[in-house]
Image (cartoon, rainbow, N blue to C red):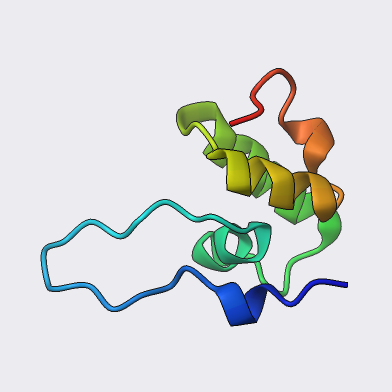
Length: 77
């Protein structure tokens, strides 16, 4: 079991600076406001995010590790 919180990519950024893309599945789920959502709701949210975003290699690995790899299709980062 990994502990993404220790390697969380939420950082402090100056006002007006774009936040970096999420690097971990847990960060993506939190940013989507789905931390307490059902598995199905999380999958739908991730699917929608993936429709307009390219996951990094690290995020793709984390999605695979957390059981969401099937949502990636051919998009492996």
